[in-house]
Image (cartoon, rainbow, N blue to C red; front, side, top):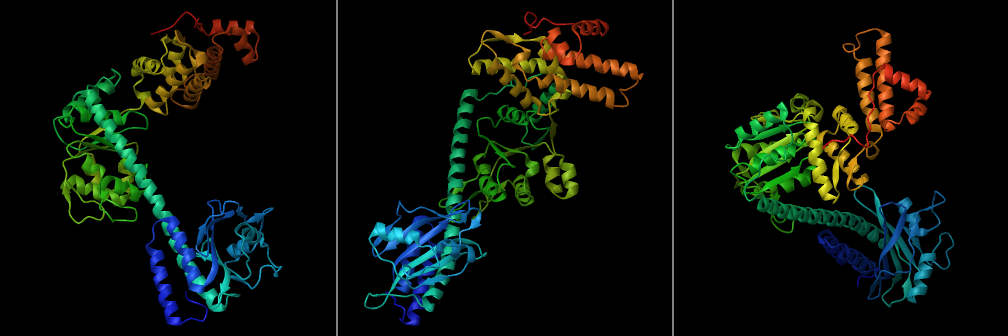
Length: 553
């Protein structure tokens, strides 16, 4: 051991050795053991403790204790509260060191009354020890942030007698504490990265299994039956897809969120000569830049902390098949340059690698953003934009192809009724009428969610009725139509009386629909008598519907 009056050269040599070991350790528990054992060795202390801040920055937990040859994490030691009634807990010596960032050197804790030593008293009782001198040092990283506290107990002289810690001890422990703080933070980051990489690897493994299963089910064939609709817009999309199938040209699918861009990408892949290979999907907005890069390009062992083995990227996994880059408009600029190289050179170089690998991959990209505007703003590369727009396919929003809504509704009813093992006979025409008039900001995905919710509420063997749908749906439709009729100058032609009557008619229709055409309830909601409501129904020629008997599909 190195005692307090030992040779300075030997102390310096041991200090360098310890800091080197700390910087190399990547296992969190072993690192804490190294910290307590090294500091005890450095200043010849009887015991050493490490307290670490939790994620909330409101508690200090005793992580490791070493006394003699005993290494433990005493279970009965309560965490130290940093705040007492919203005030800093300055009475506790560990909390005060964390707040002040200063070392505290006490000769004898049982004779000193300036701080609370309840935790050390309790440790002495649990472990059968007797603490006298105590050196408490904050663990401060290179950014000046306190991550915990290191305590040294009972300095020993050559004869093994308990003495006080001197200034040299304090300076050594404080210097070592700075190195320990940095090592602790780095090890936490390393373990977090390792966890993320493991989770991503597991996700990719499941994705590969799902892709293989899908290909097996398709038997090498994927028709266009999942693209529902017979509108001119759908016919145009199918015509474009069929033209692009024989080639390997890059495709850019444009359209709002929820329009079915990934479905179009799947149709391109599974009807092409690449259908036997993988269809790999990556959402460019789902990961931060560094993780997205490692996912796409892969990495070599040792490329960064946590890269324990070589890993293929998604681009290589899609070799011979198709890589679908969803939301490419959100891809960071740095990665855009690398994707451009893949498109131009047909090669990929993993992170940490020195040799590029040839790949035969077709890239299909999609975005809901206006890439041309992003190019002007400098947030999307112009050269990549032109490479992607060789063959653009625009998927229109659902509000621009309302003729497809009945077919989509029937498809979703059949699909979801089977999923939830319910027999759904049909849908009320009142509901279908409103579904036809709704604007669908969430497009086809929103329509599917609406149908799914109604099926969950409906009874097996029955119909989808207004009561199974959100009441706000009819009001949203009416509000949209009213805003168009009263707020748009082109559609507001006519006298004020006519416009108001049109508005009143729409409100009456909405309330009747909301109350399933019960005139008494609708009249109460409108604040008029039933007789007045009947007169207005006749005046505006509003046709009532018996939803119990009149159903479609």
